[in-house]
Amino acid sequence: MKVLVTGATETLGGLIVEQLLAKGIAVKALSRKEGNLPKGAQVVLGDLDIPETIERYFQDVDSLFLITQSDQSDTKFLTNQRIIQMAKEANVKKIVALIDFFNNPIEEVIQNSGMEWTILRPVEFMKNVLYGWAASIQKEGNIRTAFPDSLSARIHEADIASVAVEALTEEGHSSRIYNLTGPEALSPRNMVKQISEVVGRPIKLIELTEEQVRQEWKEQGYDDEFINYFIIEMGKNPPADAYTVLSTVEEVTGNPARTFAQWVNENNQHFKE
Image (spheres, one colour):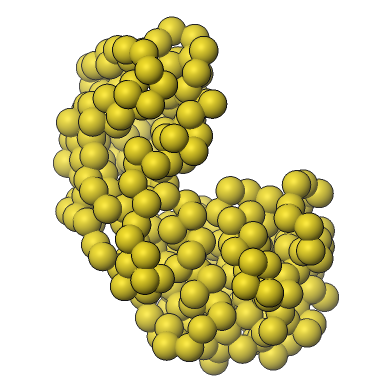
């Protein structure tokens, strides 16, 4: 068996490569540029935005892990569609796809591809706390956020990888959609407390007003439509899917989902002075 893993030098893709190799599975690891990958993977260079650059890599591949682009434009949809078509034409038997928003039209293309398919729909990644918090915790000992009591059942990236590897290599996962969460719903206030306990120093939570957070995102170049929906509305009124804890990870892998405290312990270097 041989698996083509897209996004192989990113956190999730790298974990999938690592877990596949640990099971003795041959891996083609696709990336735009060379990066650190576990020894034993066949590294292939290509760009998902330019399907022609990856077409040859589907030869002699049994299964594909595809990270679909989250951009909802027609161009991105057609690009994803072309990649799926190329995999089918190359006789890839199975596709496991990561979908990062509900009602993504590419799901229907995957389901009608003629390949065995599994769709993964994880909620927010635990790693996302690094983007807004790590630098301010290191330098200032605080985090700045709006909606500090908004809940999310964030998931450890290694759990997504474990589900993906199971679906790629084992039977019984065809035509399944797996909604994936961590083992608990946590608020920013809860998470700051856990980070503080791990790093051994107090971390102050500074609550931003709605107008302050709106201005911060504007300064980063985001438009009002994005800010109103993804930042304000999702922060004030997150959908139940975002914070409802599911047992899918344990049901698929046989192991309980990893906790946020475990993730912080594994990544504590990002929060230390």
